[in-house]
Length: 182
Image 1 (cartoon, rainbow, N blue to C red):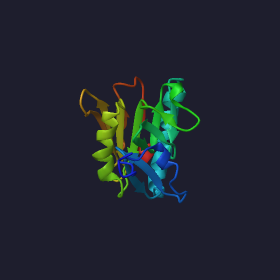
Image 2 (image 1 turned 90 degrees about the horizontal axis):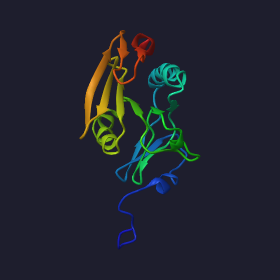
Image 3 (image 1 turned 45 degrees about the vertical axis):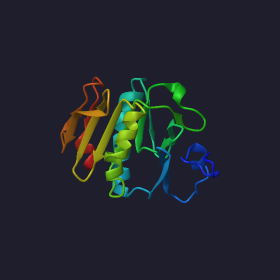
Image 4 (image 1 turned 180 degrees about the horizontal axis):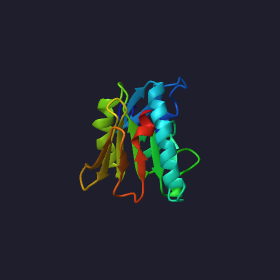
């Protein structure tokens, strides 16, 4: 608390006080961000990608896939609601949220989130040591896959159009892009 009694940065307790109004509330570096509910196209792509990820991670018993809305507490002043995420450490799944950095976070771009997903969220996810960050752009029919490096992310692979995306860090993971965009 500051000397004036006002918080300098918001935290998870503040997030619990947000209204139940159908909007998505997130805290990034202590600042509150509000996003409208996703559009149907966004949700179709999310659902189709989730199924493929579940087949890979859950089918091999190497991780669990979650979809929005679920809180991910990356730190005291960073609580996000990614479109999709993969947890490989079962202890991170608690009664209240996913706690700590998941193995993979995926954001599906929307008109209202594109800039934030590509800049602020990318920086915060890197600072919080999220190993893999994917950006899905359904308008351009592409998935950009980033891997954490010492500082920030490096692009590892990009899948476009109706081909298959294969990620070097996930052996035998093959995303059927045509199935996402149909």
